[in-house]
Image (tube, rainbow, N blue to C red; front, side):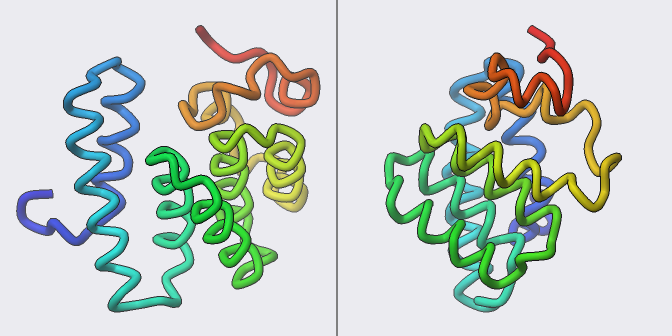
Length: 145
């Protein structure tokens, strides 16, 4: 990340790891850095669908729920058949307190590729609000606590 600060993927995974480990200060610092990186990536490349979907979740986490949902909807419109887009939209909607919409996006994301994700949803901090939902359990099993 130090050598390539504009590469969002490493930052995204490290941010998620810090969140899962409960390292709040590190998580908040990297989440802010990731948010700024995503804005810069999209300024240069507005068609970058993955950056847009990560920005959607980032906005919701920052309390900008309407803006995050707007980015998620825009991303879905840009790539309706992209399973990763649907998964990231599910994360945004789950964070926004929209469980039914989140589950609908998860169903779309895994419909054509049933093995697309098998255990990550049970660990994904963005989907914690869905872990006890019967539909989530049916799709992925019980979340690990």
